[in-house]
Image (cartoon, rainbow, N blue to C red):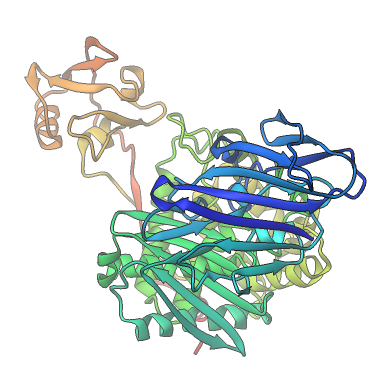
Length: 572
């Protein structure tokens, strides 16, 4: 068995001490690896930069030669037999749902950040001991007895985040005989009885939709902070969610965010933790796992996470349609809609991560993926009123995931075609490999009595010139410029607006007033220390940065109204 021990001599230092103990079994050299990424975040991570003071010892406590050979690999020269002990330290300063953080109130570890694996021995059983003075109860999916937990292999251990806290609470609820745990750190400003009812409701409809749950138990680890936070990460038997300000959970908006992200992360227990692309069966934690089906992994999960809230009654019809409207408008804000497909954007997460480029060279697999998932669900319902997107997901779960197999693009084509026939190619060409998600989804929604109407911007600089300014900036700085708009010839991202018609401009209201006075307004800007000026001709036929409004169509046909009713119905 491979044994790990974590201790912390000084919580305020945010440094933990880790020991790794294992038998050499005849090997003259041993390689230790550290994951280069974590499931749920499809980009390279830099966990290795937090590791220092790596040392190796034989069974007589004599030092062994150890050297770093790659950024995430260490080589140990051994005597070929007996036990080896590795000692090292890790800096826990990443306070989000995928990191590790230690302070005087919270000891929170994502093992995948900091635990070495012994290369070629990842399938061996392992144990984790927490050598902490104040860890009476550990919030985790692992079963700790007297400070030690067992795991059947490295990945199970690495995929099991944990925390212990001076502000810790624990609640449970049951659905279909399965126990769901809610562990919290921080202020719980919501009503606990109401929270349990809402968690139970969305869990119930998810189990009803999928017909089975992949795990025997499940753990929600909620880290509620006094400052602003919003992040969730899925794991096979748990999820970590960071949210704040915690005191605002007494207010509808942030409480709704908590329920929404919890529903989303729970559905990942099926979709990505089990239902995975073939490129990720098995996970290869030392290198990129490129895949093009992000619309399944995150898009379908984003859509269904909110749809389950409609089915459970947490969302009204109007609130659910508002969510769709917000997805549309977030998608429209990308200038690169004709530059990158959903398929390419999924692949390129590994290229530039989740950072938005100024040129918007990719679309969001969450937002564009959710819109595509809506279209797919509605097309399935149109083709057969007794089927839905759940038929696709159950098939992928039963025919692939339960056999420890991943789905391929060919699998998706085949299964989707079996549900919507020849329309499958149109769906794929428009939403997955093409650049026409918005019109395709709008047309599908119309068949269900939902109208998607264009709404022009109230700001003339957006509507006529095609330019947006940063909303949170104290100065008027350019955020986005619409492709082929009048502004695109003169402005650059991050330009600061100084004057219009020789008048100083500090607010959007002042900008509107000046633009309205002239067909050729003169602009003065500051660009990287240079002052520039130019005039732009305004033609009153532009309509850039138009958003959409999504509403139930009062003039829908009887057939469309019936489809809408079946789509929107609650499941008690």
